[in-house]
Amino acid sequence: MADPSLNTNSTFTSNSNPEEGEESILRSRPPFKDLPKIEEVDSKYKELILTLPKEVRWPFVMRKYKGFWQTEKILPGIMAMEEAFKPRPSDVIVASYMKSGTTWLKALTFTIMHRNKYVFSSHPLLKLNPHDCVPITEYHYATRDEQYLETLPSPRVLGTHLPYSILPESIKTSKCPIVYICREPKDVLVSLWHMVTRFEWFKKSFPFTQAFEIFCEGRMPYGPVWDHVLEYYMKSLHSPEKILFLKYEEMMKDPIDGVMRLAIFIGFPFSEEEIKNGLVEEIVEFCSFNKLKDLDVNKNGIGHVKNDFFFRKAVVGDWQNHMTPEMAIKLDDITKEKLHHSGLIF
Image (spheres, rainbow, N blue to C red):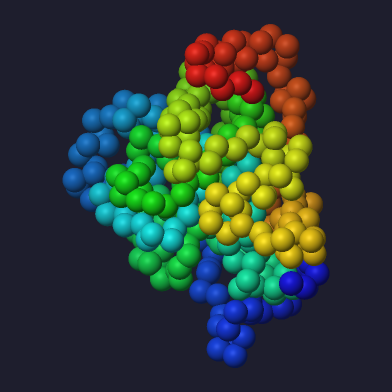
């Protein structure tokens, strides 16, 4: 494989069938503004959604569905996905709570799986955000764009923020591996707050102290975060062949080991020759925060969502710049209580 390059003038080229001149059909995701209003939602979903508990303190209206808070505009897509999504045997699912290292994990998984298809110098990640290469499945259902998922060639890498209990049964009963990444809750909150307050259309004041209180109550999109993490963690203990449970902090500390484990789990292990030739290190470097952040595509975006808000600091412990010691103790105590007896610690 060629050395990593940031030549964004390249076109996507297939390594495996260069004579066919195959081009990637991946494209940018629809803008958030395309999400239908609740008045426009299919009546079979609308009637149920309007009966669910409501939360309005978060910048988006949220509803509590099956124990988790979901953005009201995404909820019809979640319900439709539960009913209709049909995985392929070769699919790999990348799951996470929001702002837990999702963008990085998507880039790594996509690059590992397609390393024999794309050379670094003409890789899709040079022109598309990782969330375009690994689409958020429920979002495409919410924008009524689910047919796009069917156009993607196998093997697909598909993303989701759904808790395990709300995943379609078709995924749970399939042989599709699920890779889940979690992150220290204090850093999750800080990263999520920064992202939300950068929406161009969001003009209201949303101080960090308010976000902190709502987070502690578990009333965040896809939250409570502790229940989200616990579902995947406990399932990974009982079905380690189904779910690979990763910690963002451990991945940051030893990305080489993390990438090796990831490749084995999803069925694309590195050969001895690839390891000897330094391919693992090349992939880690190619998907690194600084490389991805500096690409033009990740400095811009579409509609009201700029791709640069997926890339902020990617550091461990940034919560210390935003929380008082009292706030940190409160959130730590809640986390310990919620994870009590599970064996999971941060």
